[in-house]
Every structure is written in structure tokens, then in C-alpha cells.
Image (tube, rainbow, N blue to C red; front, side):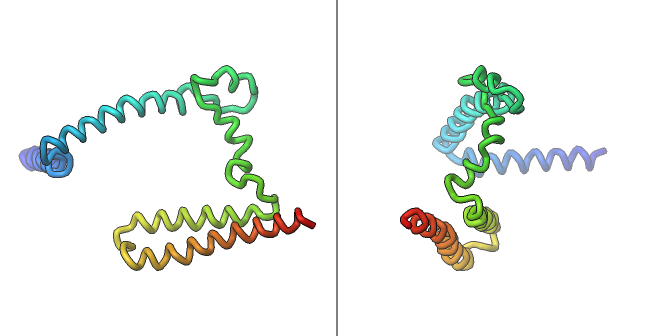
Length: 150
């Protein structure tokens, strides 16, 4: 029983030490931390209510979305228009180009979060990836422009 109490006490002590050294190491940092927590409380609560609790999820009836304007999100619209949101006016047969760009960027973001991928190793991946993303999307734009000019 004593070992369980000691483990809980040491965990609590560690938590308080972590909070003090990271978030409350001075009066100004404590003030900023409390300000950010207050803003998060003020902003996140209405966002959750709008995005999830009062949202329209089913595209069964379009009037439900019209009724929810200003009160809740209309995710039925997003489901219906996801292709246009992701690919814009790219031709249907060229959708692989922006999809490849999105996949490369998501992979690079994931690699950027790893501690082992910092510094020059990460830069050596970002530069060619950014160039290939630009080339993939601009080649499609060039073919569309030339096709429309003829």
C-alpha cells in the first residue's frame, strides 16, 4: 500500500515540477499561460458547439442546413462538395496530381514531427519534395492552358 501511495505522490510531484518549469517559471510566463488557457476556454467551447453539437451531418434534407446557418456547421455540404474543395477546377483525369501533392505534404509534416528528422536531413527532403509538388501541379495547369488556347 505504501508503494502505491509513494508512486502516486512522486507522479504528482513530477507533474507539478513539470508545470512549474515549463509553464510557470516566471510571473510573466504564468500570466501568459493563464491568458492562453482563458482564451482557449472562451474560443474552443463555442467552436465545439458549432462544429459538432449543433451541426447538420446528414445530407438528407437541404433545408436543415439552411436552418442551421449561423448556429451550426453544415457537414453535409462538405461531404457533397469534397471533390471541389480538394481539387478545385482540375480536370477529373488530372486529380492524381493534387492528390499526390497532398500525400507528399502530409508525409513531410509527419516526418517533421519526428525528433530524429531535424536539421539538414529534413531540409534535404523538403527541397526536392516541394519542387516535385510544384512540378506536378504546374504541369497540369500548363496542359489545361494549352488545351484551352487551341
